[in-house]
Length: 107
Image (cartoon, rainbow, N blue to C red):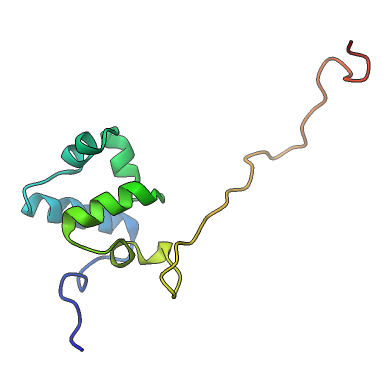
């Protein structure tokens, strides 16, 4: 089976892929801003979807390019094609401090 020419040149690094996506959209007469307006989100949110996972917006971008999201963002899917769910750790470096009132004494 010959390689799929539409996905052959997609960069693996997110920063380079962002430039590639913007250029590919421009060739199709579209932009991230236009896609954002159609979806009712900010242009920043649409741009962030290229760097951080956002299933809904990734799908919109991929469909605008005529691609499958799994081909455009392969690092966000496992080998079986299932979405990899990223669970973030709390952004807390120290233990939570006690409040100024002891909960047992509060009435």
